[in-house]
Image: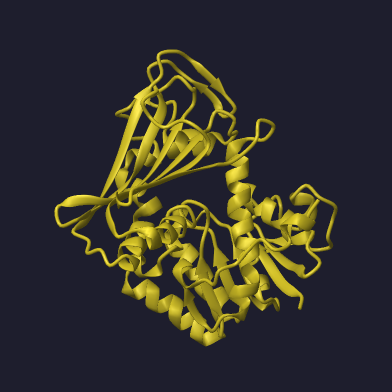
Length: 352
């Protein structure tokens, strides 16, 4: 079987998805959507840094809706426009195309409210299509690995999933400064993540999914963001971080049940290795299940020759690419990560 796919969004991770799907003989890219008008009309292969594949990117939504395809790989940063992304996803589903998205907001549609969950489910029924939200963290290291490890537990007192990545080599000034808030004074409200409610939207949905699967009642979900300033100028890929401004941060959500923290999902990042030395180091993820038995595992990602953040993006991309066959084969409706069948990267050894 040949899987006909459309790539929606051609940013950093989107380009990785294009490259991965283009090299697979059982995948055919039949369309590509771009938000950038400068990319419209360009061959999506060239946009992704490979040979032309004969498919031009477009910013015409109707052209994508009219195109016949089995599945859309929706790689947009939905947090920038959640209502618009919901509208796009529902239109794609209703047009008969299944949708796989890596946007953190869509890991657990129920967490977006009954109206949104119903709209997505109805769009699936109208188009005979399937909706599936995934990623890496959120989307795998919080929602799949800990739940699998929970099979070994008699009792879990607290579950903590932590991501640790350095961003000194990450070149996006928008994401590092304007979004996350590096290089700003600790109390400056300008960057988006100065609003802890927005921070919470990264993992709130995952926390709700995990609590439901593990049968944990939720009192409330608390958002947090802790920052550490640098005492010297830092010259990183995204620009210069001045002394006295934010150079490291820890943010995430705490799921409170029966008056105490039971689940914590969090991210640690720093722009220099000597900042916040008391925080976990390394590039990857730490999963801790405190209870009987206590279980702790660390997953490292990346090599010295590749940016760890690039490898994390690649992992996100491949999680989506490998999901295509089982999503297309699924019955219409919303498929959660916890509904997905056990799968393996069965073609990984064959890729050069």
